[in-house]
Image 1 (cartoon, rainbow, N blue to C red):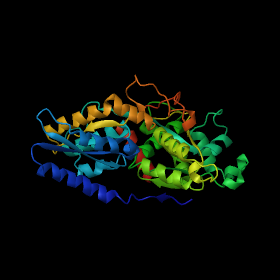
Image 2 (cartoon, one colour; image 1 turned 90 degrees about the horizontal axis):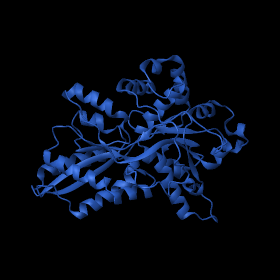
Image 3 (cartoon, rainbow, N blue to C red; image 1 turned 135 degrees about the vertical axis):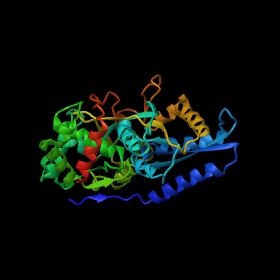
Image 4 (cartoon, rainbow, N blue to C red; image 1 turned 180 degrees about the vertical axis):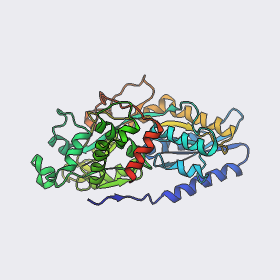
Length: 379
């Protein structure tokens, strides 16, 4: 099956906008300080209105400068190569998870002799990496009574019978998708999770595991069977939801994206006119284990970031961590970092998720293993 790597047509615009934001910092009067933020697109629905709210409220640094935040969604890993050549100069980088921070630090040290990320950044919100599948298809596989995982997906992808083996020949072949592991967090963590499955491990994934012929073959079979790839998880999810089961049977996404889709479906459904948008979708928490997206708030350790911008970025970070903003995150399907906030609706079965899962969290591997997994996928 032919892969389709979807191009992010707004990419050049994103870069231009962010670069112009850096120029604004130089041109604005001292009474204003502008910070630019690049973040994983899965947080767009949460962050976009909060940036607007923060800017309206006129927050100030201790020195009295009014803070202006300019934020742009991107694939989580996209900013790093651009930052290395100074084509992108953000104040803050907020990828979907911390998995790529060791890689970013290693590449930054090679070029600048220091880490890009100092210390352990605070997390903004949580959401587990899941396999999103249309509910009727998940039920055909035995969900929710039967635990499903990466190995089941591999079996489905390798089958010539497709859904006919489960009594639904009209559904055709099983179609699976994910984002590309060189630019998107969900792409690289799904490759790492399947490498863990191939190595029969839950921690301590090594270079030897990645290069093990059985693991290489397992990953290659999955890669060759993928129908669609995307550059950004949020955008990729929108495409799956809009096009329905004929486009993809399942994809690697984040729990919050499923909740958001189900909330939209439940609020707009019209049983008189059955459409793709009214087919429910559910989260499958892989039985072999998965990763959290912890959405770290990274203050970039770069020469273009001023002390005043650092102070402004800290003010915006605290704003995002305050309880009202965390409650807004919950309403959009994220799990708040504030553990005093109960995980109530919409984090429930009605919205296709289960807060008692995932049961197994995989250990984040070191930088050399992450890079090796990316290279293996790119071969």
